[in-house]
Amino acid sequence: MAQPDPDALLKSGTQRHAAGDLPGAVAQYRAALQARPGDPNALNLLGVAARQQGDVALALRFADAAVRARPESAVFLANFGATLAEAGQLPAAVKFLQAALRRAPRDAVAWRNLGQALAAQGDAAGAVEPLTRAIALAPRAAEPRLALAHARREAGDAEGARQAATEALARAGRDAGMAAQARFLLAALGAGEAPDRAPAAYVRGLFDQYAGRFDADLEGNLGYRTPSLLAAALAAAGVTPARALRVLDLGCGTGLSGLVLAPFAARMEGVDLSPRMLALAEARGLYAALHAADLLAFLPPQAGGWDLVAAVDVLNYLGDLGPALQQIAVALVPGGIAAFSIETGDVAPFALGEGMRYRHAPAHVAALAAAAGFSVLIQQDAVLREEKGVPVAGTLFVLRR
Image 1 (cartoon, rainbow, N blue to C red):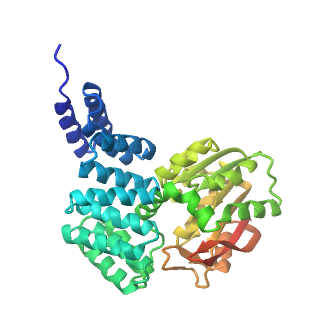
Image 2: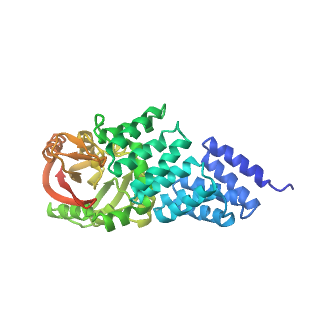
Image 3: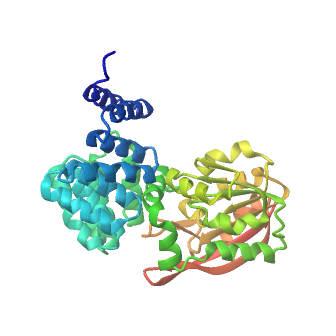
């Protein structure tokens, strides 16, 4: 019997990968690895596929093995660096991306990934140069220009950010998601009208990239306290933490909110746009089920299914809260409880800040809640966290349907 040809399997796998058949590609890569154990190309491609499937831990193992097998490969180094960045291991990501670029200085994607890793590490000014190089190497691409716009915004260069975002929009072409993200950034910079919500692709991408360092950053660097504050507000409203309620955690993220909601829940489910955040939430073992979905799409079929619906630091990615509050009301049983936080603003109905989150006027939110059939049990000012050393003012709401 003829032995399988590893090179033919790899070629078949890359063809399936390019055609969008990721499971088929993975099967071919694994077959190639079985036929030729330790094959660095198979390891690298399995790492790429695992990262695209949202399994960053597996992607790291494959990418690391590929680099160990062929440490001089610019392609393998670049893939490992990108994977490390998605895992939140930013200093190591920068190191490997720089090593890749020393060997392949015309790799536009690696320059872009390096710039984004530096920006995520807090060095927005340092991100500008590699992102500018990425643009020079791929002048027709919108993505590095949008990344440059974000870096310039974070570095305090609003005019440079507006220019880069405008150029990204001009190059977005038929990519509606990229165009929507560029318009959203321009609106946050005061160069356009704010939409009713943040683009789903922006929110998903933001938190997919943030997942690996989310908990440490919020709890260690930003003094994040919204979940515990909202749990205290629930108790103050007379909601007993007796593990008796059906709880829906909207925008559950990594499950930080679930830690404080679990004492209220007989059964708890979570919803989030980011598959990578959900993978970390699943590891906590708190949720009976987790759903990768937009909350406005998930809620309508849930009529009367929940005793408590919570949204911790989630509604600040929505401008018009009317539809969300109406859908939350429908999802609750009569007498059910909604608990959520907003970032406090003084413009009604809402304003989009430079931080690319919406701020809401509490009185307007209370009016929307009343229109949706809620009574207000708790409306409480709070400091949600810090941002660049400045307290973020918020308002906690506990409502009864």
